[in-house]
Length: 79
Image (cartoon, rainbow, N blue to C red; front, side, top):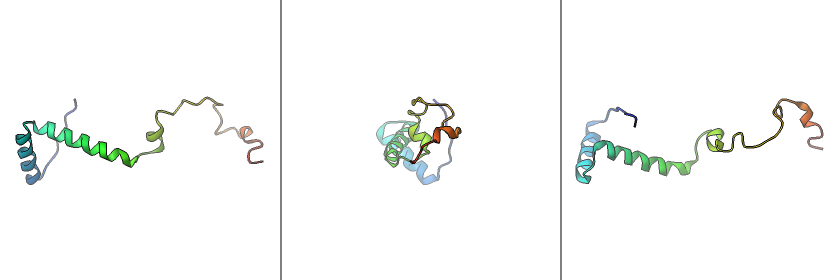
């Protein structure tokens, strides 16, 4: 697991400590859960590059390696 250090305003630090104490969790666990919830809700946004969204498809289609550069593949296109 990686370590993250961040600066919090005093009010957020106090609220984090209070919530962690109430839930019987570490402050780190509260932050991890909050981030997981944030990212799971944010996934519906589908933001990212096309490659991010289609990474599982990249390289899964067979065809000529020079399709994007060899103009002979365009002969008859659009007719």
